[in-house]
Amino acid sequence: MYAATDNASEDLERTAFRKAEKKYKIYYDNTKKKKQPRPVDLSEVVDFKAILEFYNQNGELPAGVFIHQSNFDRPVFGLKSRPGFYFIPCALRIEEQCHWIVESLMNFPQPPNRTNHNAIYGPIQDLFAAAKEKSRLLVENVQLPKDTSLKNSSEQADQSAAFWRSSEESDEISRGDKCKSVLASVLLRKLRWSTLGLQFDWSKRSYNVSLPHKKIPDDLCCLAKKLAGPAMPLDEEFHPEAAIVNYFALGDMLGGHLDDMEKDWSKPIVSISLGCKAIFLLGGKSREDPPLAMFLRSGDAVLMAGEARECYHGVPRIFTDKETAEISPLELQLSKEDDDSFLEYIRSSRININIRQVF
Ligand SMILES: O=C(O)CCC(=O)C(=O)O
Ligand SMILES: [Fe+2]
Image (tube, rainbow, N blue to C red; front, side, top):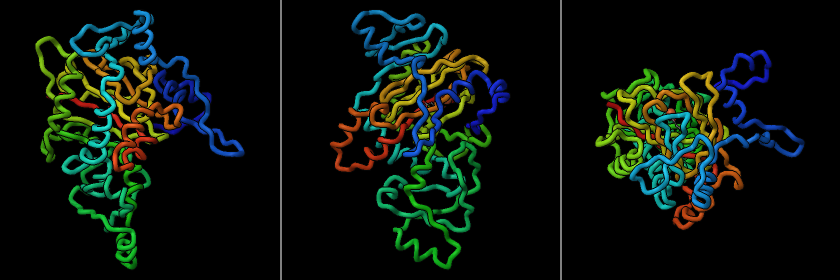
């Protein structure tokens, strides 16, 4: 995450990874009528959905792509240039995708799991339900920040008890008092991550085993073990111990990084995409290595194990337009639910769940 500049000399200093981030990141052209996203050349973005379709029809694969032999019930692709990286297009059925979207919004951000809001507001219960009810969070003596999205939370506000009120009630209480109130819908829009299982402390960049936590839910463990299979060393089982759930809205990006805080890099990170389509950049071991761009769609799974654990990666862009988000089947399924708030959320968002074995 960095400030964009068009300065030519700075451009020379950019790493290959940053150049690619800049290429795919959303920029707006201000026309007279309205803000338009600047068109971007997507011709070099690897499309595993198209590769799978072509393979199913013709039995052929593009140069550099191979089918990884495994017991998984769908084709698993590998890249010759990135050992340890695997891509499973459409790994999750639509019903499963809906289930994990609902879990990611209703349950995963619930305390003792932490979110990016903990540092400022303390533990927050029932954020998604509160946003639906247009409630406000009453907070006492807190400096409200401009941006709570960055992965830099300290534990300063962990003990404060913030609570929900209807808009009318909170108007009355905050008048004259030192209280401020924040709309739940604003906090939901600014929800950037939640952590499950062993809690990751972003300020120390390490797992803090002394923080209160619940085990990863059994059904997520089961899914992660199944998905990890193709990337696991023979006769070994994956033990999911921690997960990060990332929430993206239009314009949000995840800058290039390494996930190097887990002990055993032979174990994969299992990463699931839900909602709007995104571009994923997979670089090399240095930020100077030109990254490969690929589309991630709802239901796709990515595994990063072995050497791929040492590769920079990030998400510079999500697509929320009707034509480019590619979530029609998901929308259809979610529209069958009584509650349309999940559909509303996912129409303009992407969720990523990535699951790790820590020790
Ligand atoms: O959103 C994604 O697909 C990648 C997330 C990721 O790399 C991370 O949280 O470490
Ligand atoms: Fe990562």
